[in-house]
Length: 335
Image (cartoon, rainbow, N blue to C red; front, side, top):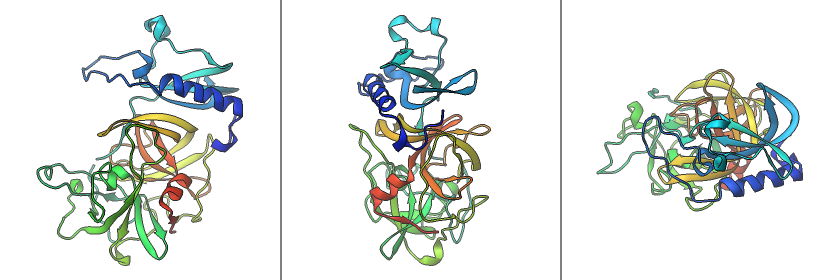
């Protein structure tokens, strides 16, 4: 059962998903102790997201719709205390428990200097003393425009240090973790970011930085993706084949597993809730790794941009719908 885009989800299925969100995600989070081999089965800690999609039985999609409960660890039912067991159905809709691991914003792996810099390469900011010994790098997602000005697009946590960096701060290519030189490798300056909200739901993790000179950056995506087919993003549908290029894992392929997931991600700000996200499963192994945050997710068949990667864990990755990102920033893609 393919659900189509997030706007085509039936009302009853959407209501069941929202009920699950309220039950498992709208409560104070129980922080797990950082101890090796210690796992909590309590739903307030183990459930990291809620979505919808075809129920998977024996590794195959069925024609039955389900509310998906995404968990950090999927445990055998007898190991879970009765009071912590997840429901088999919500408001008459079957549930499907899917292990996605503990989802994290992704940052850091060495990449070289590129001129012109292109989407998919290493970028990053510089922290001031006394934190100047902490080095980072993420991924340049795309080139976008607002009026006559052009900007690089990536995540808030890649360009703005989770709301902490001041507007006007320089952005380097490559990021300093990848041996970028603060004296010569500035390519843009932070212009605007969508604030990350610790106390409420988030829809996007995005920011833009104005390009210092036109010759420093080109819009063509690196590696196998190449030039985008259109400046208009494509709506993601369940099962869509997608691809990306990022500084952490390079070129990878995956499929959209969920187009309307509500998920919690670990940030320095704490556990942040993101609503209406794209959950992507790698075709063979991980779709993304540390350092891939900010990468543009592209429809493999259409050649049109679909999402902005923000994090992941293991074989699952999370992306904002690109139409939400561009709307938030008041920007358009440059191809």
